[in-house]
Length: 194
Image (cartoon, rainbow, N blue to C red; front, side, top):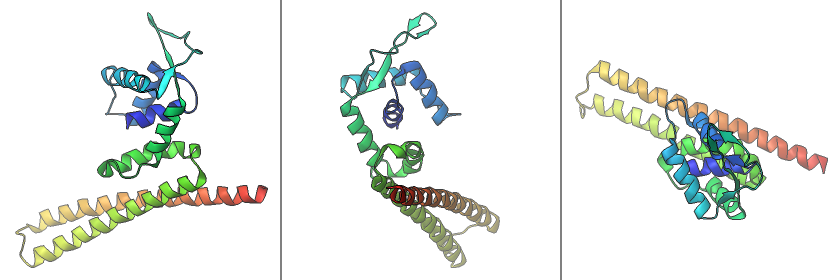
């Protein structure tokens, strides 16, 4: 996740490590924070792998007594960014979180790729909605068939939580459908202007 964030930020302009860490923390906050002990070794690894390099411009910044190094993305880093953007199979349990970090940078990939990612996430949301609704129905059926010895209050509270989760996925689905509609409209507008 941090690698995607760093590379996506550097797709726009060189940035110094301190600013990369601040923006990353703003994106993942308010409770999760990336420490300097995580960020700077990651920047060093990305630099060692040839995905980023120290920028010759913009290295005149100071933070306290320290000289700040600015980083820029390399051609290999741009390829890695693209691969991370298009990856829909890694971390399936956390893909919702990854997708939210991808959305601000969709403009950096081809229109067909944007639609692919949006369609994939629509399917991902629909799968979660179907799963939660089926689990709730199964729980009601199994409780009424006495397979579970669940007190009515506990069953009601559990079903309420499951319903809440389904509603959250429904909201994600609607949001993604809106993103897709905007993308389709942009494509139609671009075709008319050609």
